Length: 124
Image (cartoon, rainbow, N blue to C red; front, top):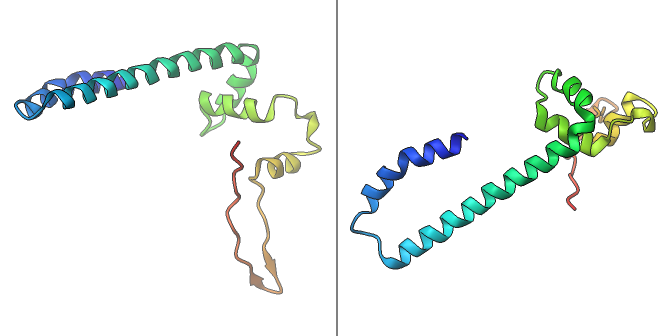
């Protein structure tokens, strides 16, 4: 993991920078932060394993989506999670684009262009 290499390489720099200036409270806070970061890294690894297991039935679809320029495995997983693999629920590609919020619009009337607000993403 790239993060680990950077962290290990800079530990000596951190140690020399805080030498003589750090108190017990600071050491405790650094330890709490380090433990929290370790916990988050472990949780992310577990979630990535779960996602990988859930994607196993869709390997072919992931590979096809991964072949699209600008789409990687993470984006392919997001597409499958959001839209599924059964495109028959959408009447056409235009309906899918509209549902995804990426359809182009023509906001012009009588030669005047109307101001367009960005598409709002609904958070759960």
